[in-house]
Length: 444
Ligand code: TRP
Image 1 (spheres, rainbow, N blue to C red):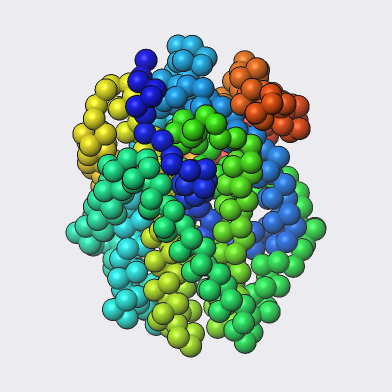
Image 2 (cartoon, helix red, strand yellow):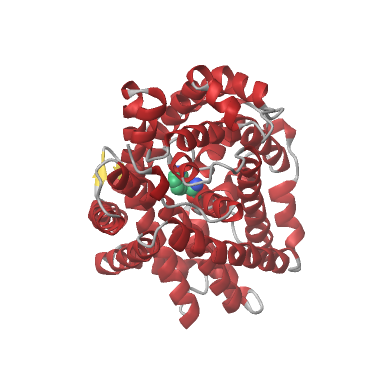
């Protein structure tokens, strides 16, 4: 058993909420959500997305919190303590997924550092052609890509090595508010541009004719990815939350902050893209090719470009920290390594594992027809995350409901009014919904 009294902890509820929101808010919110929403019916999509975040995502997040709080450890150890040895593979799967995600997340995180520095020295592309050529040349240069990947991993390591309260919590308490502020400033700039209305219409005009199975599926997959659930990240963070603190209201607040950032990111991107007559294209291209061109046309654009890319650095650093934390927690809690040793070894190892991803976009390093980076993303996001989420929902709903009821109760032992709904969702609704994401996401 780990020495529970000496375990590092979050110092405050707000620190815990900001750190968990930091994990959830990432590249998925800032580039992925806006274009998925734009393509899937705008406001109609946003509405369904919010419904799914709170009705399916939040219950699964709560399931992870229950296991972490009761298990007081990393995913493998916590599951062994609360549910028995048979459930350890669920934790191990989460740790493997975290290693995979961290390996390529640091590569893209490195790009955000490179773009922030380019924005500072004023050398971003000025139109789509030059920005595209610069992006292409950058990803083909292994020394540059690996160098920035190393820098990003070093930053992640330096925070996580300092621990929960002094490292992750402190960083997120300072920088998450900075992220919110920058985002609001950028949104105000974007929606007040002449010609912003067309972008707003593209993003937000409800098109209910697009409400169909594939749109609901896109919303569910996005909600799942964006909330960072299914691989034990929330479990681990929950294990560092003081037992006197409630878990239901923080889970709600984390889901709210994550959705808020995703929604506002759309208000930053689309009005500006349309105002200057660019194509609302998708994927990394929108962020790393279209947006530099947009900023070069915008009055005061160089300042806004710095703000935007710096915001991306914060968003991706706080996500990568949570991944490094989960993996390191396993070695600290189960293998009795010191935190310094665990974070150093894990960061170095995942850095090396990320090198094939780093060079795959420029050099055509492929795995069965996908770039190595996309292949890693597919395995973690489309296979392990849904299976893990389903595992946590089923486990908590069917086997751990008495514990959950206690964890959802206030100081007088009265369970939260959401408890019965939570249980039905975890036992039946979430597993079916997630099974559906899983099966339809299996197309390589
Ligand atoms: N939620 C992150 C984003 O929106 C990405 C992500 C998926 C993630 N799974 C994760 C981050 C697990 C941390 C841990 O970009």
